[in-house]
Image (tube, rainbow, N blue to C red; front, side, top):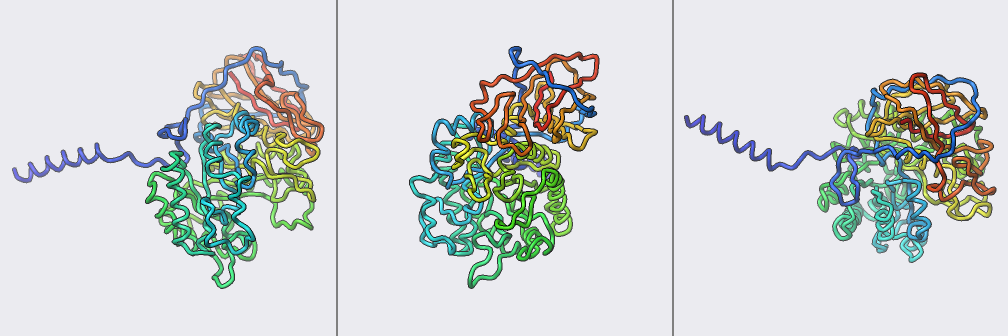
Length: 539
């Protein structure tokens, strides 16, 4: 009897414990809040209403391409984290605070912003106190000058655009100062955002591209070479300090996609050392991809369009390579998510970065990252500035370009406008018979199909759709990014051309979409313009 009472009491106590226990923490990037302070929930996206007053879909047909879409074969969930970009403190206050820039952000539909920069992150003291200054910086405090975007400016920008943030804390300070200094700097920043300002930043990463000799802290006089092993040990200390302030945050670790020493001198088996140290202390891994490597500014030769498009496979290859290392060095981390927090067409501000090809290639990178299973991605970047020597710009918006006014949207801007309008909340299966015509398919919560179709060719195509698992109503609505040439900086959005000096039109919400009706008892055949990224919603 005594044992029976003990058993019953244990069961009741266990049930009470289970009822009082907090819910298990969701995996990072799986859930999405409708506002910054909301409790995360599964992301749901309804298709925009069909507009009967749109422009008629009338493009010439071309050679046939067969596309098979299976709306019943869901590959994975989709949410706004997969369509993010970067903004930097050195962009300058107006680029985050002026109403026209805020409106540009609202109309493009980006809801996920990485801050406060790339390599700048590893010399940036958010509080403006440089009592232990970075070794390689003459005047680092100017990053906190009145002209720069501050943490408060960034918070205001995110609130006005209804966006979430991913913040990169200063790891370099662990090297030019010490790890406890870096941990305190990071923990106080978590407190400033999440508690003092009541602006919940859920996603944090510790450092930027620390495997590279260009990064502050990678190599320092009197210090041993930074390795993945050393970084992993420091990461655990910094992450622990951050989680003491707010345990409900997710922390990312800087990984590198190649194993061994083959990529370049100084790599030092970075990811192997990191993975062996992680032991569950990071919530996700971080990759960057600029496709063309190595790079020397004075000797760089612009690659052909075929070469650029040919690099697309690296999106999936890099993730596969990283998971192969996880299998070898840290199998307990086999389910850790991977984020692509920086990417662009190539790793230089060459003319290609402001030409139509960048818009098309960016559409393909976003689609391939969804297919490969990256849980988030961020384009580099919102505003960068024209390189007067190389005549390119890695920003979504023109800056310091005498041919295009400041704030003029570049081609990649329209890629994100396309995805924000036509892509639903679940990725579904899609296959194209032509490797130069890429198709990425999604399903909205109401069952409508959202498609992004990239035609790399200089001729129109006729896409014949085999639509499985989808009951069509016979209507479609679409948006088209195109231009006269892949290497033309001037582009058009739904037939409205941008300024002759480059870029596209704005505002875009007032530009009518295309629309058409089609017979539901026959296969849908759709004419796709040459050199285009086309978005279509099928109702």
